[in-house]
Length: 312
Length: 296
Image 1 (cartoon, rainbow over the protein chains, first blue to last red):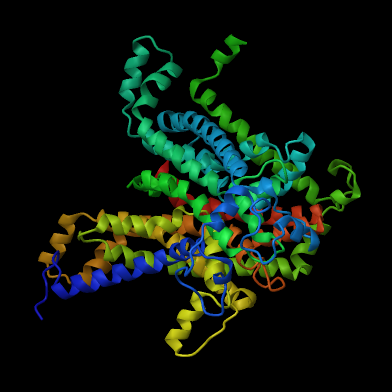
Image 2 (image 1 turned 180 degrees about the vertical axis):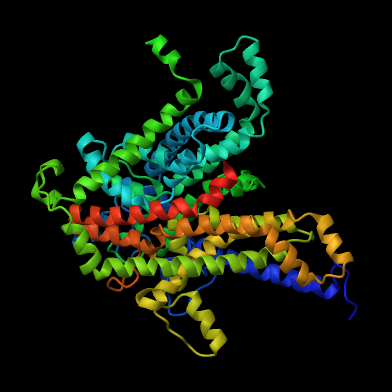
């Protein structure tokens, strides 16, 4: 066989590579396929002795359960005709899934909490990023200080936070969750925005200041508009982080504030046995917004997750 | 007041909000944590933490020298983190090499391969729970390969449970490694490659002596960031095994959660959390250096 010069592949190499890529893509997509397929399965096909790959009798009941809340969607996938709530009470379940566990409230809660936290994180982060980008504020120590906030397990800080928040009456409140989410995403927003601000020439701000703007006005009216694409990408990125966050919400909230991941965990911890169908349906619905946002900022994902260290 | 504000230099004024947030969420909790860790406080007593009795270093002594569960959780986390980072790096490099050249449909394949890292970690845990249950598709596929029925108890076996957690993490985060390494692979300057080719270098030699050395900083960053996230692993453990059977698949985060919030011995757990925090902060100072150098 003729050896191909560098920069060119033989036919065989091309085919093999194609096969390999198709194979890894199929393996990667399989969990998604299984989740979506399960979300359409009726109760008998969830865990039969021989796994069902594609639902024989597809049903929308799982989605109905998620939208209406298991307590209201009566007479469906469970064996008896009682609502889940009655069964749960009989079994002495701590977590009762009632009408209020429909996805709407957690969805709106998540939307509200994540948007507020993202906005705060971006605003505070932009100011700090500007200071670091233009004045090299604080040198390496400050960089390290901010990065370290992302370094240790959140649980190690959440324990004293629970203690503090109970004193400030911030437990199980929107404000509490928003503050913590803001703090935990700040390292990302600072470094990602800084990497975008570095691309904006500082001469423009200097010109604006000479023309009579204050420093702060120059940031608002010159720098931010020039970096707005980057800041928008950072916002979506931070939003995804917040939307997926589970541990902090789990420990700092109990009944009043329920985000989407908490709802997911409730579906999972019910004593009724695993409700695979509704779980899969809920997982599918909860994943859709993040996947859409992820696609929009695909170009910037690496930049975000490496704190702007890799710009491509 | 206005005059006072004007006296603050502009770069420092910009930093004030972030300092306040960090103060409230980092410095303050740290002080509370140290305080509580020196006491025997538990919320079950009904007193406030600042009234609790000091036991000084007893908690630290107990957790390091007598708590086998804590030490095992630390070792287990190190095991999970290193194996996952190694596998993810290897797979990421492999994927990256497959995608160096342009071909038809490259963008679609890249987008599809990136999907796992956008998913909510809890949902990823979910998916793998469904896949790895006794009569789930994974056992079925293994059965096809082996040629007979297999029933591996993936989620209720200490070793298999750990493997399940690792597989789920590898599935979710190999795409990140892939993205980072692909950025590195495609940024190797082409004229250096051409020079090497004209000097008679083979493909493997180019990879070994040109690409890898050039990509070293990028690989280092990828490893640091992945390793750092892996040490915090919680969500997957929470969904897949709940640390069980017994305490055999607990990680640091999961141990602190389950010991802290089921026994409510806050002083004891604060000591554990502080030890973890101290280790992480010292380690991170050295580990993060390459990252800080790159971004600052």
